[in-house]
Structures are given as structure tokens and as C-alpha cells.
Length: 494
Image (cartoon, one colour):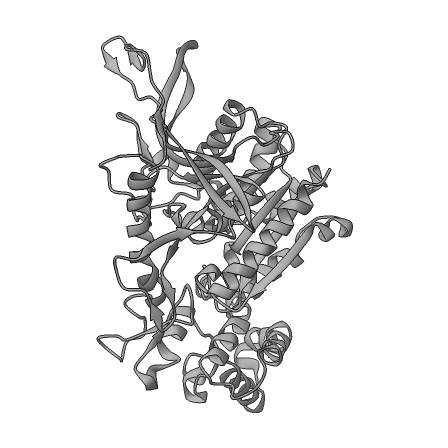
């Protein structure tokens, strides 16, 4: 059993008059792990940090009032030089997701064993040391945004103020500032690691931390990124996602054997060529296409996607993504996963247009939930009777009021951060079988970043033969761990 200490408060701490005010409830434990024959002793601090806000009442300072309690798990290497030791702040997306996926799937010193396609582990699952943990190269701080994990607004406060783009940035940014200040890490190399909407948050934070606090980062790790929501919005009249999803559709069809023995590289090159030239032209022409032009476009699109010519013709060359996942293997009475299209599953109604659940999410929800709930209590010594919100809908509706009248994008914020901080490095990880944030859509956004050509050299790309959480696929997890370690080491060099 690891040693445990709890932060102690004075008897009257956290009290203001007759009102009880929340205080940090952090628990510290000591652990070790062996990585490449090297024993790493590390300290884990987990619990809820109280966020406070300076309040003025009729122009008079009224104190720092508690607003929210944010659950954080931090890992720091014992005896390290704080000035040279990198620290990575990590979070997932949703919006509404806790940080459990990156925490116990890829970066942390312990990881869940969930199995993979056609070899899922039955409950009650298992936790093992993660010999590839990024802790070997960087301290780690996992953050659960308000209303996810154990994070909540305090009594009397409205959680909705954090359920939106700007409120989320400010609260997560405040956690980062507090942790950095309290742990004496302003001179450490600093990184953000985000997945999915977490990449939206990370790009926004890179700009926010610079402009609000003067905190400049060394690097961003963007995993399954979405920086411009126009690339994913299948609203009528927006043809952009139809073209940008096509290479992913082709990769999925290839994985499920619908491209014969053609190499994946050839299939992707073919799909990208069509998606970049003839397909957008065909969609833009609309009913001005001749019968021969339309037939050629339908035939090629059907060939690339694995769908029937009749289906492609019936949907007018516009294939919505969940309809694709439901249609592709209909003749096998299976649907394919959205988060990871290697996974398949049955439906109760094989005539559906939209599947009722994502089989790839169903495959990982149980293992990660059980592992987290066990881990924080049994190994980290933190106890809380609240339900740990793995992925919650309680954050909806999510506010994008800052983007009223225009589409949601943080590409401009990422570009601004890179222009102001030319040392900022960006690592982007793509899963070829990610049907939620397709790789070609992310590439499209990067290709339109408004930065000097020289700064594009600061952006590196990594591709994996798996899905949104590419680390569910064991070979991808091992390779991705190496790639992220190399990135952190390179971007930390002075």
C-alpha cells in the first residue's frame, strides 16, 4: 500500500462568518514505476482544487469568492530539477468528457487493460503499470473541467457559466495558472495535451494563457483534432465535410475488406485526389452536371466508399457520416463505430438510417469507468461519493455565444499564438479510422493556418491505423507513446 497524506486545514479554515466555504481536498501518495530498467519514484496529488474569483460589490472589493471545485490528478517525478523538468496539462473533450481516456489509456503511469477489436476483456478488467508513460519525460496534470469527473460548481453557483467555450477556457486556464504558481513551475517547459474537443480547448488556451497571464507554452499535443467546426458540420448547404470525410470513409471500407488487396496508401491517395479536385467540383455544379458527369462521380464515389452506386445516387453524392456507419455493412447486419471504425456491432433494426449506439464507445466505456473508480480510491486514496462523470450530457447546451453569426473555429487563435510565440511547437495525431474527427479535415485546417511559411515547420504530423482513441490499438499506443516522448524532448530543448 502506498503512503498517503491529506492536506490539513486549520479548524476555522474555509469559513466566512457562519457560512462554510469549500477548501481543497487534495490527497498525496508516493509510488514508483520501472521504465526501461530505470526506477522512477513519483508523487501523485489528487483531489479537488477550489477556483475563486475576485468579486466587487458596488465597486468595493468583496474578497475571493469560491466558484467551482475542479478535480485534478498530478504526477511529479521526485528529485527532478523544476526548471528543466517539463510539465504537461492534459484533458479530453466532449464537451462533457473527463480526462480518463488520456489518463488511463495513454499518458499516465497506470493504464487500463480493455482489449481490442474481437478480443475485448470481460469485466472486471485490470490496471497495469504503463511502461510507456509520458511521466518518464514530463510531469503530468490531468484536469476534469467543471461538471465532468468529480468537478462541480460550488453551492449557490450556476454550473452553466462553465458550460461554454469562453467559460471553459477561463476555468481550465485558471487551474493551469494555479498549479503552475503553487508548484513553482513558471520556469518549466510547459505543454498542453488535448483530445477531440480538448484540441479546441488547447488551441484556445495557447492564445488565452499568453494574452491573459503571459504564460507562453513550449508545445501542444493535439490528438484527434477539431479546430474548425465547419469541417464537421453536415448542415444542409455546407458541402465541405462531405469532401473532407471521404478519405476516412475509404480507409474504413479498406479495413473491412471492400478494397480487395489494394494497399491502404493507394486507396487514401486515390480518395484524397478525388476529395481535393473532382468531388468538390461535382458538388458545386449541382444540377448543372451532365448525366455522364454525374454518373462518373457517383461511380467513383461508390468505389471509394464501398457503398452501392444506387445508395450514392439516392443521397445525391452527399454521404452523412452516421448514415455511412449504419449503411456500409448493412448486408452483414452490422454497423461500424464512429469513434473507431474498426469496431462493429449489431442493431435491433437493420433498416435504420442512423445507428442507435456506437459499438466502439460501448467497447471502452465499461473498462475505463471501472478502472478510474477503483484507481482513485484504492491506489490514490481519494474518496468522494459523487458519481465520477466519465462523459456527461449535463454540460449541454454548450454555449458558443462568442461565435454568434459565424462558425466555431480556433484556427485563428492557434495561428495568433504561434505568431506571438514562434517557439511554440505543435504535434497533431491522426487516426485513419477515426470517424468523429477525420484526418483529412484536420489537415485541411492546418493547410489554411495564417502563419508565416517558416512557422509551418513547427507543426508535425503522426498517423495511426486506428480510431479516435488510437491508443486502444496496442501497436498504435506503443508508437504514439514514443512519438509524444520525442516531441516533448525536442520542444523542451533550450
